Image (tube, rainbow, N blue to C red; front, side, top):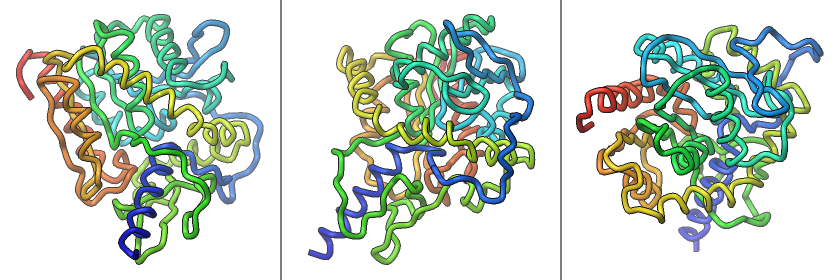
Length: 318
């Protein structure tokens, strides 16, 4: 019975962790003034069909690395500043968060359309290496399914995992208050651990500017409401992504795919699915990391992207 209870808590932790994803912390940042004037955007506001999204591109070279989330563009500061040394890299804020305008009802399909239109209208030519963390991994997969010729390779960073919706259970903390985070199984001495992105001890590794931007936008009710609805789109995101896989045993052919995962997680079936997207795929484990690998072990994420870039450029195996 104790083992069963522990496993249920572990499943609950994984579900909330990946359904709410990177920055759905949803608690106003502490000590931040409610200044109504936003900071200057890092990149450009690009029209995507009646509204604008924020696209931040740095560096030069091809193929361009496109970060489709999750989270804010500036949450990827530790990764983007390294990747830009090798090629052009673009991160974006989906509609309803950051500098981006409000858009239609959120979905993975909508985010794919936003990214596609933003890249096209900004003159960023493909093919692209798509990089997605958690829910962003689903966005990357749906993008590859809709625009396969525009994808040169893919990197998944602790891809979201699907579980049936869970009702309130004894000992299970509501996911609306935060994200379940490290240790990898989400359980410590039988208790859930709830830690937000800005509560991660490695949050301080981000630049002061990136930390300030994260705190400023996370203090806004609009952003909180948008992020709070992330879990609602998960079932359709998985259906769209899995539909892409069903069309072909290896839908990406030999295009490079790297899955970056945390240690000790029971995600074997998901890893098998992700690695089966291509005949040229591999897994990297980010030791000493929780869900927020992009600040816990950005070096592993950068390494994964660099490996995919080399494979795509040279047409060689990973």
